[in-house]
Image (cartoon, rainbow, N blue to C red):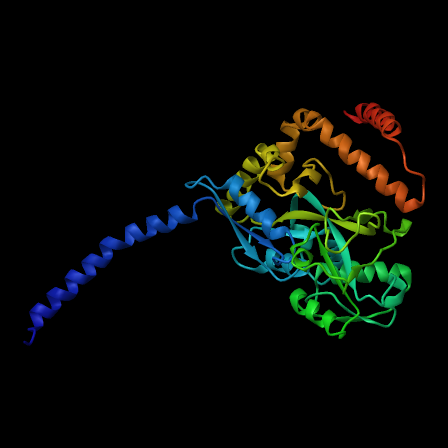
Amino acid sequence: MKLTLSRTAGLICTVAAGLASLSPAIAQQSATINRGLVELETTGSDGISVRIAEDLSRLIDDGATRRVVPVVGKSSTQNLIDLKYLRGVDLAIVQTDVIDYVKSQRTLLGIDSLTYITKLYNEELHILARPEIKSIDDLAGQKISVGLPGSGAEITLLNILTQLNLHVNITHDRPAAAIDGLRRSEIAAIAFVAGKPAPLFNRLADTKEFHFLDVPFTPLQNTVYVPTRLTSADYPQLISPEHPINTIAVGSVLFAADLRQIPERYNNIANFVEIFFTGFQSLQGPGYHPKWSEVNLATEIPSLRRFEPAAQWLQRNAQAIAVQNPGQLQEMFSRFVDERRQATGGAPMTDTEKGALFQQFQSWQRTQRP
């Protein structure tokens, strides 16, 4: 049956009217879904930053007015670039030595417009090697995989090797592919920076094929790196209780994009900060990653500028921040003393000696408050 011209025109008008009536509903639904949305870029799932982003999402998401969406990026360096230029990325987790590297190489213009919300946890340098590689000196002239170009592992490793005057051949493979290359003797070692225990190594079965190498700590590293250890508690299948591995750690930072010209997204980040900082202590409880125990929201990074709403929150809550979790602070202080004395060859301190030193530290700390 053929439609007349008038009937065809009437049908078109009816459809158009129906679509027009749907437009406000679609716009309203879009606005509802995007309300309070913050996108947080992490590195890959072989490290722990994805889990950290998931923890933040659980804390922040109220199902109606705010939400954190984790975005898996390529590398710490790429995260900085994406935070500066990629549409939609509001926050990113970045290593502190990567920031210094980008600044020194001038590879990212306008980096000073980015601000940090807080220093997060430390990430440990893991060097997994074949059995014939007995020490870091044996890596001279060998192939070492550092992940994708611009990875945090590449920058950290090159900094350390430069200080040790060691020259190696860098290769760029995804971590899982690097493990296969290690098995086939195509490379001598893998360098990987991630908070311990890193999922990449936890997925390895009990094996005698590989082992972690000790990484020496030198005074030249004091401004960026700190001495630490990998233990059997972190990697029971790779480290014996009697032989912990000495290595170094680098801080990670939660950065915010420069969104001062986009008020809605800027306010979303400000709201994120309010909920994150106010509910921070719950992140140190059961069900969240243990690395949250290393985070001190008030830690300052002198070379960087803090996101203004974060700075204002800390000023309003300075007294509460100063007195929270004294037991945790003492535990962190004790671990710092142990690692520092081990790195410098000093004799271990007893718990009594560390307790007395901590009391002296608290007395000194009180004199520093305005």
